[in-house]
Image (cartoon, rainbow, N blue to C red; front, side, top):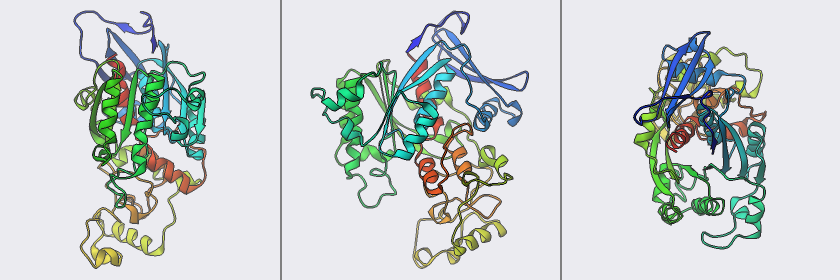
Amino acid sequence: MTNALPADSATQFSGSVETPSCTYAFEGSGRVVRHVRAGGCTYRSDISGSSLADDATAAFDAAWLRSKEWPVVHRPLGKLVVADLFCGSGGLTLGAWEAARAMQLEFQSVLAADNDEDAMSVYRRNFAPRASFVAPLEELVDGDVGSALSTGERAILKGIPAVDVLLAGPPCQGHSDLNNFTRRNDPRNELISKVVRFAEIATPTHIVIENVQGVRHDTGGVFQRSISQLEAMKYEVSSFLLEGDEIGLAQRRRRCFLVASRSGPSSSDRIYKLASARAKTFDWACADLEGIDGRSVFDTAAKVFPENQRRMDFLVENDLYDLPDEERPDCHRLKHHAYKSVYGRLWADRPSPTITTGFGSPGQGRYTHPRVARTITPHEAARLQHIPDFFNFGLSKRKRLQKLIGNSVPSKLAYAVVLDLLVHE
């Protein structure tokens, strides 16, 4: 990472070494300022929108989510170079981009890979990677750890500069607790090993691999094997769970991170100390969208079957949040079930539950709006995933939007992990 730290661009301070910190404050002219203090300097970034919340941290994030234009890096001090494998539409990259901005760094995506053409189209539109590949990663990175470079691997590395941060979100379905068929024993679980192989041949400074918590218990042992291989490559490796609502996400979401670094081990405790914030609510993220005249798929709710519409009407009219069993379909009503949140209604004053690709159906989870008898819109789901308004999906098909938004990693999680790595370099 290039970071010259000229004295007239970042505020330098003297004295004893202090623990890195990230603080927020209101400033004149309706702006909120973020100060990151690390390595003898204080880095400044700001955004307009101080009237959106009483708390400066909440006001900053609220303004960021509602911004129609990408915020800029004032007086950049260097550049952060990032590669993203299994990139999807770019949730991890978006978080890394904002972490770079917090450190007054320009951001450059030099490589992105995914086997979903629609996802890659969205990624390219927003991050303009130097090189991008639409193909299964095992075809692009076809060597094993410890083997010589293959022809394909030479091709994928061609023209790619040194990578500061390697991001990866391998498919999580094989590890998910919602997968009752191949959980813990799914061929897709082995794809983490391809991330390790890419790290071996590209030698990034930092590696951030994200997945569901079940990844740690795969029967093939790929998670522990990956840790051992990265340690053999002289990385310091940590693995931990992060709770999204504990770093200010308007969503309860637990994710597992495997972080490897040349600069020392990371930890959830360290990240929480740097980026902790009070949990946000559905209304904090989405209340301003309720009155939008939805003319696009992005701002309209999905059409549902009449029986499901009746169930949503019942919840709102009776001010209930859980649908009584007598109102549920026979598969719930006639036997004991553990699906209390399914067909449920969201609370306005609480974080949402985990957003999945099924947010357009009340039968897929707690996705009924707090005040209106409808499911949440793609726009509302994006806000809950901490995807801002300036992010351009450019898609008009509902199922594709739901898949990309539901499969996305909330950018706030990636921001916290990457920022922690940067301030401790």
